[in-house]
Length: 182
Image: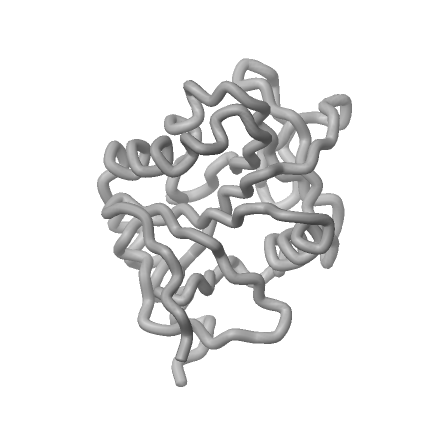
């Protein structure tokens, strides 16, 4: 079986080649239509991550960004106004400052290194989104929507007990709904 580290390296190399950013924006905007008045958690992209921001320009609800509050802790989400200044936090992630209110999202757009057809994701190894999705799901419904270029898909990701699956992955080739495992 291929290790997560090997799959992560393959997926990140593919991501570096990029994809169709305009198509990705269109597909993400369409996937978010049912939630246009809800609380949507995006992320401020780092390195060559797929960028959710262009698809959020017409969002009519509340936008939030994740904040790392410490190692081995779930993320919190703070309200984000697109014209408000951001602060640079841990791991080089930009987010709203401490005065921005914390909110619980209805949808979490999740960055990733790679994904498979069963809705499993490869992150960067810190477990932040796994802990966060576990906590949010214990509180009630939340849609975990991965965002990636289609070239980041890998065959099969080894799953560990703490891994939280995605409900949907949006790519530049369209939406990928997880297949039933087995």
